[in-house]
Length: 387
Image (cartoon, rainbow, N blue to C red; front, top):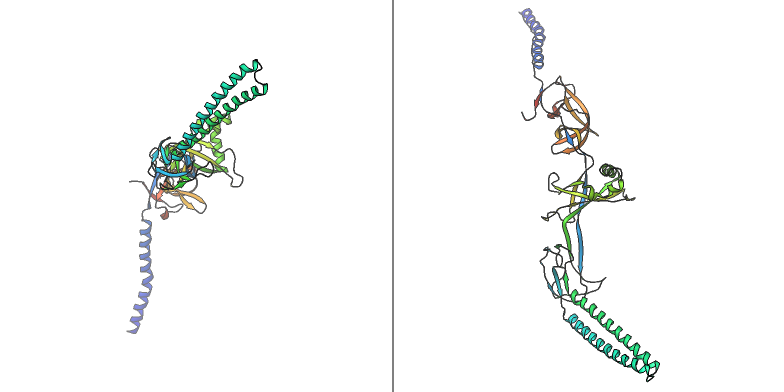
């Protein structure tokens, strides 16, 4: 009985490896029969594109004028609502004019006095001219009468000048907008005393012309070189003409912080003629329509400026581009449905597409989804994006 049990044990021990071998063969066959990984792909296309440079800039008013009082007095009335749009010549503030009107009336009276004295001096001199011929008066008296006419005439001129100056002061009691634009808030309430003067006049408000509006950005030296070459292409052989940006009609595009794309189109009007030695940058300025007032002076914006003419380029979905440390790459599906790793040089983004400068040709298939599931040399089942 013991001998029979030992025989059974050895039989079972030798049978286990055979059973395991049979099971392993089935697993290997199942792996071999597993279909290739499905991946979504898109076909690279070719289209005409323009190269752009993108810059960070700030909006600036086309004109900005600080409104100050030219004469001293009490602020009589403010004639606008804070933030209101005004036209050139619109009344903004009134300063009490009574004192200046009184001084003006007095100056007018002084003109009348001076003119009367001039008339008397002329009559006296006319008599002296008759008397001097008969030696009835001395030459000294004659000269004095003649000088009196000149002096009286000068007093008339001086009186009129004083009156004109005072008339200006009367006019300065009504402060009008020098430009068309939007007026800022009033800095003083009515009834406050304001000080006049060309240099130290009280600041009352500011008026800015924000239509059109300007956007200013800084170019580094590399971007400036691209831009200058673009100007040369447009201007031809005479590079002096390339500095007249407003005549070249180079478009530029603007984006606010909460916007997608660059919906605001304008034109370049100025490029600084020298590079700042300290910062290595130079300014560029574009002008934009702003009839709706959305663009506000002081805002940070992004600018997009063309750096080339339209040229053919390869485009692929931006999602197909991967990062590999300092390089960009894509997975290309070759004719054998195998994955190839390609290092690419990328250009600008066009909506959801990316310009490829090198590494992918038109009509090649690139993986756009499931990139983490594939590796070079792997066979896949391509599925066209959207299907």
